[in-house]
Image (cartoon, rainbow, N blue to C red; front, side, top):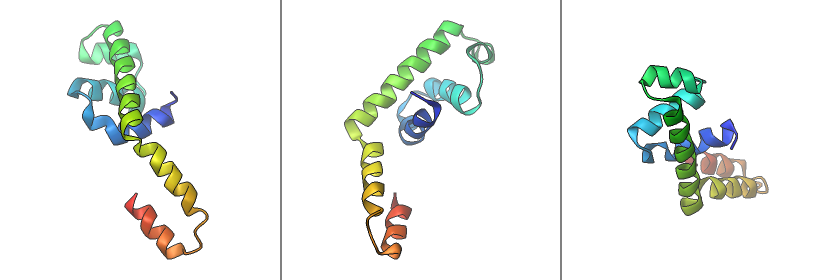
Length: 96
């Protein structure tokens, strides 16, 4: 998963992760910390950081597989491109 995909899933489903998972993910993906920097900052092993990130990404994918918010949003935006009424487009996009 690339950073952009992760950030989208993290923005949407991040609150479903544990506090610690959110903290580690935020440091890694948003603050661009390395595994070592995170392990030192949180006083945990580097392996624990890697394991937490892996599990967090799996969880976020699982949530998307079940809820499908991102895929549905992409489909709606795609359909909106064919809509001729700009006012309706803007209103729908503001809701999303």
